[in-house]
Length: 302
Ligand code: FUB
Image (tube, rainbow, N blue to C red; front, side, top):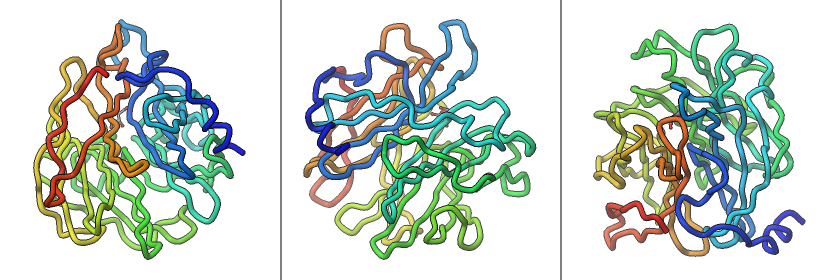
C-alpha cells in the first residue's frame, strides 16, 4: 500500500538542493519496490546558532530520484530513553531484514559521556520506529585510539549477499563490527581500520562484486573512497569523489542504485540562508568508469 501511494505522489521539487522547504543533512537511503526512501537529519539551527540543533529525523520518498514526497518524521532522538542528553539527531542509516526496518542512529548518551549509536525498528519504512534494545548498541569507548566524545558516530549498515550484516562507524578512527542476524547485537569484537586522513561518514556499498568504502576525509571534508574484495577489505585507496563544500565543512554521502542508475546523495549549504548548521541535501547521478572506479562528481544546482 505504501509503495503504491508513493508512486502516485510524484509532485514537488526536482532541482538541487532537493528538499527546498527544510534545512537537512546526513542523507541515508534505500530502495524497495521501485521507491527510493531518503532519511535526513533536520537542521533546525537559527542563522545565529553556533552548533547543531537537530530534534528529529525526516523521511522522504521518490519514484524518480527527483521529486520527493515528505513523509514526516519517522523518529526523534527522544525515542531512545537512555539518550536524554542533548538529543541531536545526528547521522543515521537504514536497512531492511526479515520484513522489518532497522534504523541506526547517532544520539547523545545520558549517562555515558559522549555520543552513542542506538538502533530502532519498525514494520514500515516511514515508521514510527521504536528503540529495539532499550540500551545503546555502541557507546563511547575512551579506550580505543581516540579520546574524543564524538568518535562513535555516523553508523553505516551493510548486509552482504550471504546475510552477514556489518556496522561501520566512527570519527577520526574508522571502526566496524559484525552484527548478529537479529540486527540489534554485535557479533564479535569491534575492529579499527587504518585510513589516512579519515574524518567520518563511512559508507559501505557493493557494485558488480566490488566493495566500496566511502568516507569524509580532512576538515573541511571531501568525499573519498577505497575498494576491496570483501566487506572488511583489504582496502585500496582510490581517490576523491566530491570536493569540499564552500559554506559548510561537512558533506556526508550515501551511494545507491535506483532503476539501473547510480546516485550519490550528500549535503551542502546551498539553500538560501544555509550555513554550517543549516545544510541542504542534494543528489547527483553518476556512472562507474569501465574499470569500476567512481569518477570525480561535480555538485550541480539542478
Ligand atoms: O550532522 C551532525 C554531524 O555532521 C554528522 O554526524 C556528521 O557526519 C556531519 O555531517
